[in-house]
Image (cartoon, rainbow, N blue to C red; front, top):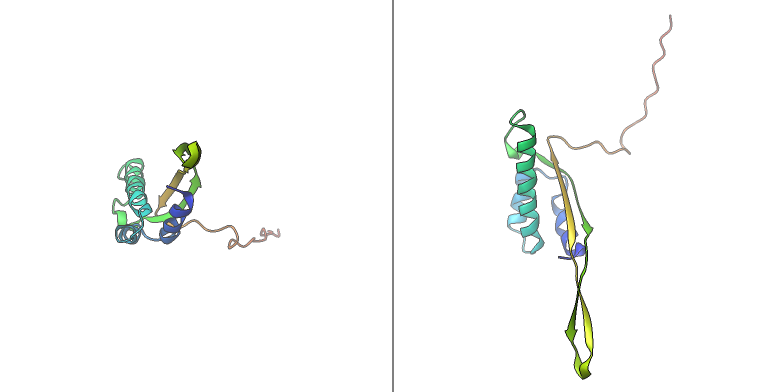
Length: 121
């Protein structure tokens, strides 16, 4: 699937709670939602495995903290065309990266620089 089609759906679930994101993906009409739902469920399972039950196992406490789609390899094929010619067909693919966590990361723009405290003796 092309990156352009995937990014339309990726933008819908960025920063949402996992339960809400799964609901959005389940009722979305785009085909990209099917692939994203599978990847999101895999990310949740990976998070549960890595925490080894030490943290809350309730998947609805999790947040989709980071998600993006990058372009993948193109598969090039040829299709017959009139007068013995051939037209090139490019089949696009993409790579999806999903990170889930308990809290949202703080954007670097919102972090205010604080001056170091001086201690007078």
